Length: 140
Image 1: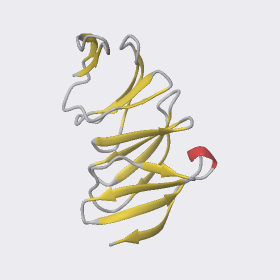
Image 2 (image 1 turned 90 degrees about the vertical axis):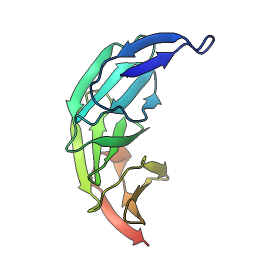
Image 3 (image 1 turned 135 degrees about the horizontal axis):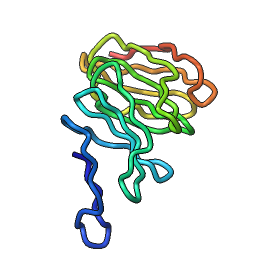
């Protein structure tokens, strides 16, 4: 279950039944993006909790971030999926080859994501995420 709380009172403003365990959401431009362990991934209106779109991810999305018009979801299978923030349509996927449970982080067109076998994966993201990513370097 995804809940939004009123800032002034801490009381529930709305809730959205996603099903399964819900991970930490990303919020951008009045939209909440979040995945769950049943492979569902949704975008809901932050003001009222109404569904904007729903899609599925290849594996459980465990961390999300938004950059420009693209939502990036990391997964427990080490797969990063780039999706259109407007529609949820997959743009590309990248497999880090190891299980990851992190939130992709961006700085100057590079994304950094941690994976559980104790290394970091750096990806080059071009044209606001509209092209495929490639591994630059893995740090151990």
